[in-house]
Amino acid sequence: MKIVKKVIDHIEKCYAVTEFEYDGKRHLLCCAEGKGPCRAYDLQGNPEETLWNGPGGVMTLAQFPEGDEPVLLATQGFFSPDDASDAELVYYYRRNERWHCKTLCRLPFLHRFGIVCSRGKKYIVAATLKSANAFSGDWTCPGRVWAAELPENILQYDSGHPLKFQPVLNGLYKNHGFSINRDEENSYAVIGTENGVYTVYPPKDPKEQWKCKLILKEPASDVLYRDLDHDGEKELIILSPFHGENIRIFKKNEKNEFVQVYEREKKMPFSHAIWGDAIDGHEHVFIGGREGDRELIALYYDMEKEEYKEFRVDAGTGAANCMLFQVDGQSRLICANRETDEVAVYSFGSDDSLG
Image (cartoon, rainbow, N blue to C red; front, side, top):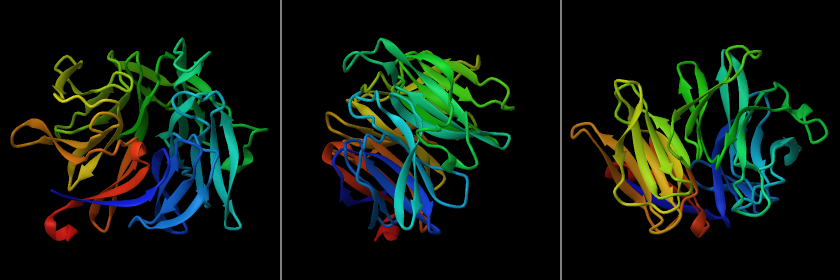
């Protein structure tokens, strides 16, 4: 497979990436972890506009899925490594060609969030890294998973009238890993913590309780749940321990228990970026490390040899987050290479398709 890299921008401590649709077009976004901007690009990587220039501390971005006008959800006020007592969930909306910001809810130490659905109802799931600290690196107060039913009209909420969240899972140390997964018509969150890996399912009825289950008692800094070997059963891919160096894959056995089936021999210090998606119908997991060789690799399952393999996408860059997207029948990966302040797009294909 041929890989072509294109550096599309430089943002100091670039961190969060997403796709955002507005004006009838898809756009790529990249935002700073530090006190920097959020910028939009077209699908070819050409800069389009700056949505905001601060205050920064953005860990996660996601499009609000309701309404006729574009609304972008974002964490704000989480500064590395854990200066986040003033973190909050905000949203940006546009009026008269300008982007405006309102607070949706104040959630100290909010790190990740996503949107799940159950029987037509949508919910925001938010994960706080911890609950409080007396100093940087203090892990004595565990984090939580919070949830709220998604409103149809988000513009009614602000700092004086915030959306109310309820805790659905408590006692989570180093609550860092987060991914959204789909199961038939519904979706759920998978949470990676020092305690282990949990699934968090929304209720079938809003009056019922959320269903949270510990599925793997192994520390996990980041986590994905994907069917890499295409056998109909998902594997659990974890980076461990917290901001650690191990890449491991677990799969259910005949007793319906997760057992380890793969561990990368080479360590990846400060492994952090992780994204799973298909290229030409074959599942790949992209993983990036922020120390050591600062590698960016793609893991996949070789169906003929019946083993997990990898190829290197890049090195020396230090990806914080990445996201695969499709354009003109081609798979591309946008990457926030935080350690080099580099926003890059990698294109995957044959020699003919990439030129």
